[in-house]
Amino acid sequence: MEKRAVLAGFDGGTITSDAGAVLLRLTDRAIGVIGRFARCFIDARNPDLIEHEVRTLVAQRIFALALWP
Image (tube, rainbow, N blue to C red; front, side):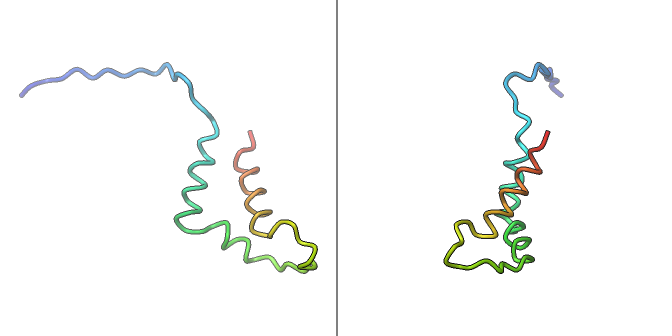
């Protein structure tokens, strides 16, 4: 049996703490969690005056909370 050396480096290099946003986005794409949650709200606003859909507002809030330090 041939043995091989294992080399590990823990210096980190350039890293980010925002990787959770990528995971959240991928999860949303896979199961649509943000859209499902947005459908829980009743939008009583005047449709002629709506600039941002409820789903957009919910997504913005969820991502803001997820990225809070």
